[in-house]
Length: 147
Image (cartoon, rainbow, N blue to C red; front, side, top):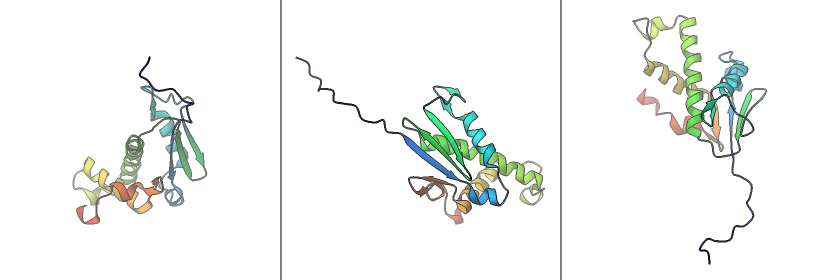
């Protein structure tokens, strides 16, 4: 007699879906949505390999929104980490292309903390990422007095 329980019919796998709404930054010509889609497709790792999404993860673009859908559980923190790095790179280029580093820092080198604070400020202003209808900026951005 076995101690295991009877195996019933398996249901549908629980997946996760994340939507990145980039309408405002695209209108302001701060970022290009096609480059963000390409960035995510190249950088997201599945099975330890970057860019090998296969059928388990899909990255789809619809006008000014990008939807990342996974068949299995997908970490919000993992996706946020990639989007954070992308936004840090975009903001870094924006600062240097507009010669704003003179006003931000006396040296020609901007610290990572300055870039990170601008990324959080960017997320707070635009409210880009929603997970289950909760803005990511509401979850991770510190209060304005702590900047």
